[in-house]
Image (cartoon, rainbow, N blue to C red; front, top):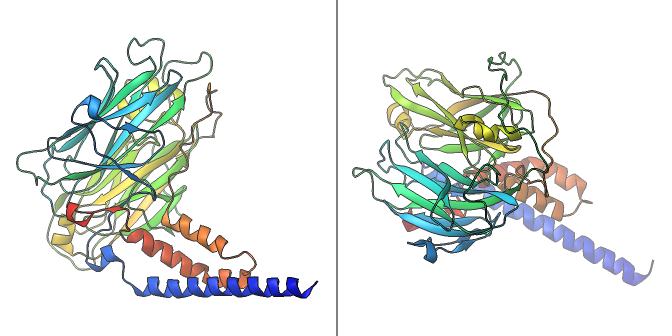
Length: 435
C-alpha cells in the first residue's frame, strides 16, 4: 500500500470520526431541548411527509389544479367551502381519492354534524362515489378522513372512460362552531383491475367470535401524529401514553385473508375524582386508501374503560361488492390505520397528565394469494416515512464500520426518534397563524 493510499485511508477515518462526533453533538442538543408540542401541554401537530406540495383547490371544476397519483398535497378549506381538484385517469385502473381533514385550532368548538365530504365526479358531473365523515359525538378537534373511488366494472355505465375526473372536497359547519380554517391532507392512488373473470359477490360466513384474552406482556410503542408517520404494530398487546386532545396513529399490516380484531383501553387515574365524559376515548379504523372502515368509543369516569371495534371481515378483493360499507372497505391488502383520540374534556376533569393506553390486536386467518391483477399490484403497505425511519437511515449513513459506536448509540437514537415523532416538525399542521 502506498503512502497516498495510507493518507486517503486516514483522511476517510478522520471524516467519519468528525461525522459521528457531529451527529452525537446534535443528539445532545435534541435530547436537551424539550419537545415543542409537549412542553406547552399541547398535542403535537399532524405531520406531513417531506416534500409535500401546497395546493389551492378551485372554486369551480375548471379552476381545479391537476393532482398526480401517489403524491402528498396540503391544502386548506374554509367553513362551508367546496373545492375542486382534477385527476387524469386512464381506462385500466381503479382510483381512490382521499382527504384528511384537520380541524383546529386546539380548543375550537365543533358540532356533531361538522363534516368533510369527498366526491369523485366524471366529466358529466356524475358521482362515481362519495363519502362523508362527521366529527360525531367526539366534538373536539381531531383528524377525520374520507375517500371516494372510481371502479371499472362492466356492470357500470358511468365513470368508465379515460379522461379528466374531479375530486370535490366539501366542508359542512354548524353555525355555532368555531369558524376557523381546516387543513387538508390530499392524495389519490390507483389499483389495476383484475385480470380475467372472478367472483363478483362478497364472501360470507366469516367468524365474528371475540378473540381469547391475551396473556402476553404488553410491549411499548408510541403512536404517530398522522397517516405518514403512523407506528407499525403487529399482533399482541401494546402500551402507550396519550394526552387529552391528542390523536395517535398506528398501522397494522394485513395480508389477503387476514382478519383484524382491535380494542383500546384507557387506564384509571391514581386519585379518585368525580366526573363523567360521554365520548372520551375514540377509535377509528381506516383502510390502506384512507377509507373509513369502522369506529368505536368509550366513556370515562376515572376508572379503566375499553372500546372495541365490531368484528371485521377478513381482507378480500371481493369485499368491494358488499352492500355494507364496513365490509366493502376491507377490500385491499396493506397497512390499515388505527387512529386513537382522547377528549380534551378528560384533561379538564381528571388532569392533563398523559393517560395509560393499552391496544389489543388479534390477527386471525391464514394469508392467501391475492387477486391476479391486470397490471402491477399496488403497494399499500409502505405506510409513509416516519421520523424513526429517517433516523435509522442516518445511522446507516454514518458508516457501517463504526459498529461499537453505533450499537452504543442505538438507545439514544431511539429516544431522539420518539422525541422527533412527538414534536411538531416544520411539516406539521398547526393553527393557521403557525404555518
